[in-house]
Each structure stands twice: as C-alpha cells, then as structure tokens.
Image (cartoon, rainbow, N blue to C red; front, side, top):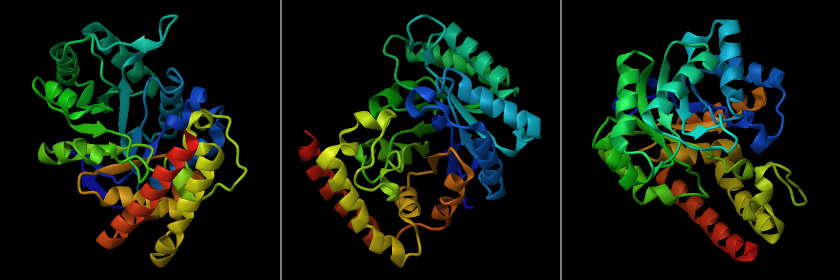
Length: 319
C-alpha cells in the first residue's frame, strides 16, 4: 500500500480509504455486519489505515458499527478516522445545522458512537448558508484546543465556499465526488487544493459500481441508483458499452476495471486518496492494487475520452 500526506497535516494516510457510506440503509438497504467487519480487518491486513464515515450515515448507525468493532478488537489506534457533521437527525425533520452549539454537541455524539476520545479528521459535510464561517471556525477551534479533533476538513464545497472558511480557519482537506464519469472538480476545486496544500479525498470513484464492469444488460437496482439516469434504460446500456471499451486498456496493465478506475482517479496530482465503499472483504481485496502506481498519461486521457463520449451520449438517451 502506498501512503500520502494529507494536505499540510501530520496525517499520513493510505491512498485507499475505507468508506462507510454503505452502512446507510436509506441509500443501500441492509448490509450484513459479519462480512463488513471482516472487511475492516482485511483492509488493515492490506495496509489500509484510513476510514471515512459520517454521523449522517444511518443517523449514527455507521459510526456506532465502526466504534463497536474497533473497540471490541482493540483496533482504534490502527486507523486514521474521519467523520462528518452537518445533518441534524434529532428533530422530526432532518436538516442542516452548523451552528456553534450544534457542532459541539454533534462532535460529542460522534466521539461516543465511535468509542474514541479524538477524531482525526472532522469534516463539514456540506455548505450551510445560514451559519457564518467564523462561527463554524470558533466551534472547530475549541474542539481542536480541547483535543477532541486533530484536523478539520470540508466536503462537497466549491472554491468560493472553501475560500470563506479559509479566511477564518485552516482546511486540511476537501472531499468531493470525483470519477471518470464525474469530473466537474477538475476545473477549479482540484487546482485550488493543489495551490493551497489541501488534501483531497475522492468519493464515489467507481460511480457506485458502474465503472467496475460487473453489471450486465438487464440489471435492475432498488437502492439510490434506481433514480440515476445512467442506471436506467438505453443510457445504462450505453455506459456499459463505454466501460467495456476500457477493458483492453485495463488488461494491458494487468488491472481489473475497478482497479483501473481507481488508479485513474489517483493519477491526478491533487488526489490524496480514493474512498471505496465496502460491504464485504472481497470489495477491499479486489481494489487495493489500484494504489500501487499511477496511469501512463496517454492512457489516462484516452480512457477519459472514452467515458466522456459514452456519458454525453447516455445523457441524451436518458433525457
């Protein structure tokens, strides 16, 4: 496993990050915990030392599952743990909240669920237009001073929003969606992160499995993918064709399509790591080799062009 420094922090993390979004029943349905626990242990065996979760994943469920398992196995100190705050689920209606008092409360709740006394990376899950950045910074500054968090990061923010936060606090990292299919952040956010030494944790690098090549025509989906145009009808078939066009490129490097897609993401110089959603040990076992090297430049651009052409045509079909 290769490792990288997370931005300007003292955190050295594996280039593959174990993602816990899959423990969010609202998006993924029920996930058996036995294979998931085995996957955490296997990740460690392969050198993965970075786990990303959020209080919103299952309204605390993912954090509790992770905290219980790490505590029972004595593994807390083996991992850098990242979690997030933003969605309050303590009221009848789920809504954003990044006010001072709420952040302090949310952090205490996450610490309790994770069964730890310190969160390594505490991330703002999204932009909250109703709370001033200096109020957020004050809360995070207090938590850092008290030793409850080590570093603060952000997720799903654009350049202007990051700049507002950077005016009042240090930002260790950005967590954006990034894959061969979703490349919007290449224009502004990734260059900004490079310029300011902000680490980047790409989520959904496999576009929820579409880039793995494991689906065939006729596949159907009952989770959140059912609402995605790229997972339906002719658009889905066109994307399957585009992904299959990548196979000779992946084969030539001795990679599976999933490994190829992750290596494509990690080739970008702004990237610290790719977050891979994991439900079972084979999911982590089959992907870690992606972090061994980066792609040759010509293959990176050729594969990007193949997927862009497929995506553009699929979107026309889907609409």
